[in-house]
Amino acid sequence: MPLDFLKRRGGEPSPSQPTPQASVTSVILPEEAVAQEHQLRLSFSGKSSEGVRMNSGPAAMAELPGMLDGLGKADVEIVEPLPLEYSQATPTIVRPSEAMQWLNAHHMQSPIARHALLVLESIDAVDMAFDTFVCTLLEGELDTSGYPEYNAIVGGVASHWDEATGDMIARAVVGWGGRGARGDTDRNGAKILGGLLTNILASPHAIGLTSVVRPAQAAGRSGVACAHCGFNSAHERAFYCPKCGMRLARS
Ligand SMILES: [Zn+2]
Image (tube, rainbow, N blue to C red):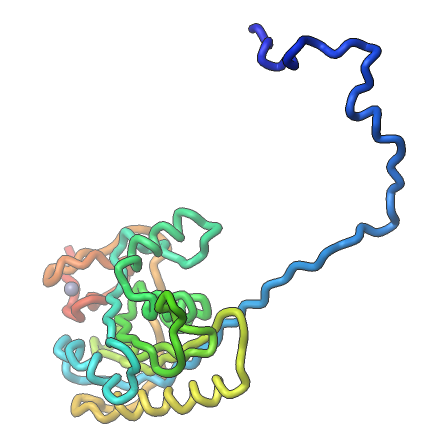
């Protein structure tokens, strides 16, 4: 195979010409490399309340956005649980397959909802394989692109279906974070969480507080399709459709 393209223009250097390497006279190895420091501190925080058991069945879904009344500073958005095809979705950019799933699943959402999902999924406060999440900006400012600032508080109400009873369990969830932190954000987050929980408990269908036992996601990809809404659940042992709350039919 001819390797002409490797030759320098004008042909090979003659042995009398010094090569560039020859001009480096000496290299003293330092005991320690002189380092410039580079660092980025990212901090994500959040809080979630106990669950509130709701006895209204699938109709309870319609009540979720109203639980943010009086607390939201932007439009309320509903993020539905992800179907099986997005079961690996994770907001981690160095894992392209997971990141692509996450972007494909969430690129239609507003910057506020995407920021909320990034923060709350990163700290495992919501799990979009099972949760329905109604969220908005709860406190603070947006940047010029519409994304919440690091000290803005986002969140709302997350709900899932209790596998033992089929009841909807709703809980308050708030989060914040990014490049920075402020001392009073945690306190404000706790206050807003209390306001959200009060709103959830004010629902006529609320039975009372319950501990939150979130369903475990199936390891495999053998999902179950819901006969009522067609949702393909990533949860192979689920009895209730994560999306519409109806009982899943088994073959
Ligand atoms: Zn369904």
